[in-house]
Length: 481
Image (cartoon, rainbow, N blue to C red; front, side, top):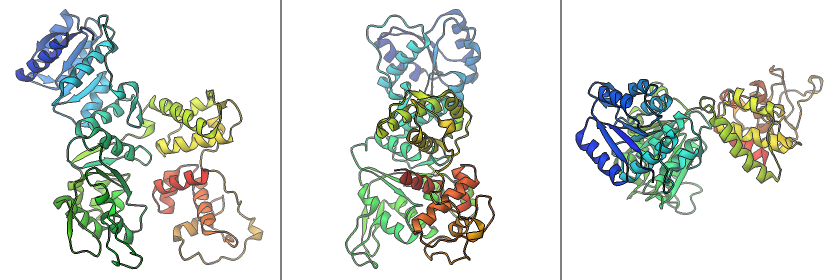
């Protein structure tokens, strides 16, 4: 391992001496400072490979030390170590140039590994006898995520620091930003990793069936209950239960979920007996939960019970060069699945990747790449020339002169979808003949025309149809198979 020179800036003597002992045992040379003023003087007079920096110091905010790094001898890598584990502080440190962000308490193995990696990145480490082990996210990959942006590195740090806690995690962010991937990462990083991971989409299951799906039921509890069912909560016993789109849950069921969170006991539909369940809860929504509470659609007490550890996922358009990394990885996988030999992206496609706003985030990017691979003919992907929304309807709207009188909508079709399915490409309401079409075909036509009206913006299309964007993305992915 590299013999690096490390400057520890920490006002707690016990912590500073603890870090120093661990690093010295690993072969590093260590200097200690208690204040910002001392740290600035040391950086100007000596050369360091790594700065281990606390944020709460007696004479100011530790982040201000970055102002002195431009005049410092050498190019030290900065590792922020603090009890302040907020995502905003992590992002601020990363944007200023920090190599990593660790939350107290820090294990000795993590400290030594991160210091060695930061020393190599700074370019000032001495010749190493062996290469340091690096954590997965330093290479841009982390439990299904791909990204090196400061925002995502901060998310990775948060996931690592909270994984073994029993506290409930509330993940928020736009549709397609990776909320379920976050839940899976928390599970994989935790001591529960050997237990089950069970995901349930609260917005995709009818309200009258969601309680049974979540808590289970006994035989004969209602029409169609032909056998006992344990439910997702019991199925996740000993592991992690992920509640996606939790803000779409009915208010009556929210009361039962709150009781479950408070007691750790479930009661199956039709049963009078309560059963203990040991699960870690991770929930997510693409809505603004505080607005849902303010408007009476989500219980305030449940929100505060769920929002113990908040994790916010940035939109793809806010992640800079991560877009290219994700696109490269997805393209390689999709090309292999489709049996295509693709050499990369055309220049126009590279420009499109950077300039497009990606309102549907990673899911939209994945669908766009698959369409481009399937419909393309060249060695390079022409993403800019491929359809930007869903594929055009296979059944084009009939000419106005041939349209029949309005017909009643099928009783099982949502009114909004029926209304929009009858619109022409110009956006004007007009009668449309649904005869000869299945309900699935009518639904597909409605969705495709809504996407066409919004110039490929799936989020806006979903809003106009009164459904969740994730619902549309799932259907688009099914139709593309």
